[in-house]
Image (cartoon, rainbow, N blue to C red; front, side, top):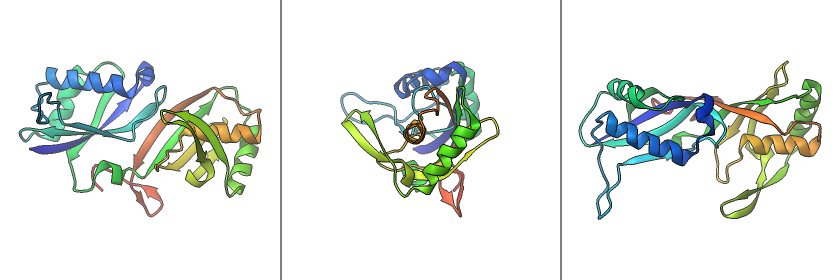
Length: 220
């Protein structure tokens, strides 16, 4: 059996699909592309597919990762090409490599995000960012599947900056519990309610932290 890890993008209208929706689309694409999948044992076998740190629904991304268990060796580039022939519009496989011993969960340690705040005043956002970075702690609450949880937003932020257009550039840790980009915007609104609530999220990268930068989880 071969373990193959792939990086894929989620763009355009595909940003509104859930992680479960993508999982169903990928399984159909694997069948249509005749990828030789390995299956779990038992009465209801499933293809060996595992995900790590998927982006939230409504966020686009250039750096989503999935691991496939194959029943026979395949060239990574050929798997990428075959899947791109049959995946729905908005999803694109970008890269693939044989899995290294470290798990994806261990390798995905931080993310880079682009956050576009609709109708934002750059000066207002910049002042709120300065205030947030000057704090030692700022917590927000968010409803999860396990109920209402509290997140220390400040502890997860590695870097946060504002462009001249008022867009945020965020580098944050991938930890449990996970602080999401929208949690950071919520924290900014606690500081200044003039920070807009409407936002467009785009993940630019995620991977291991190497000397303060984000490395390639496919080839660490």
